[in-house]
Length: 305
Image (tube, rainbow, N blue to C red; front, side, top):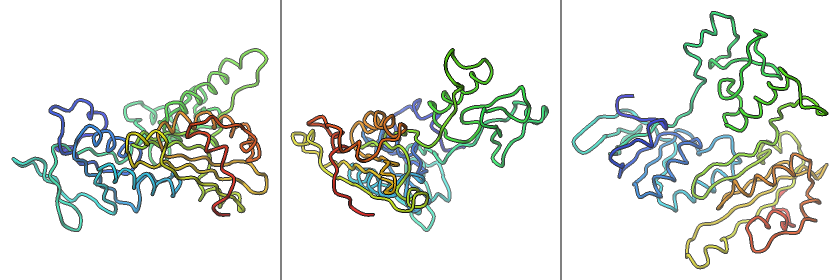
């Protein structure tokens, strides 16, 4: 930690880093790469893996990586750090396989593990997993009946809205559901997610790879275009929209987007998907013109099966 910072310190940097090296390939690393690139920093991003944003749809990962590079981020894959030394010229970072990068700041965004140190869980016998995560049942009760755990500490889906949803399940378990309602349950199948890169990502449901494994026979619809908003701006930024359909049931099981306001657009479609909307329902829905969102209800020809 001597010469590096984390996302905890990134907003307190003085002076502003004109040269920023980011180590990591998750959404935090990619978001800060986009932010500082947009603010004028020369950003180099290193990731040990084959492609950033592991766990997202492969086509989406490759597309957003390409758009980030087009915007000026120096994204280097299969790359890692050997050593960091402070010099008069800045932080000199030696890379695996040779070469070096000189930066004003080095941000490590390589993931987090549950922060359970000092809570006394061992003393009361709360069961934990291999990474220290607190083990819970469907109602988020631990093996100690009086102790519940929700959110990142359980190492399931590390998103604030998910933690809030889990907390509502605990509230119903402790105090009962509101009058006339059944106890809430948490489902993880159709959790909408946004990555605030530039351009941003919005996604809900299964990736194409997951859908092929779980559903077998799937149909994929895809559209790539230059948004109308860029006609006057001259930007070459592209938008990608994608639907993954379970062929047997016609249900839309995956919806993915890279483009402006992707999170805002995907949030509404998440409701439809959680309700079990089919491709036929999408096709019968009238689009709003001219918007990017209408593309999700006007894609008719599959690109592959």
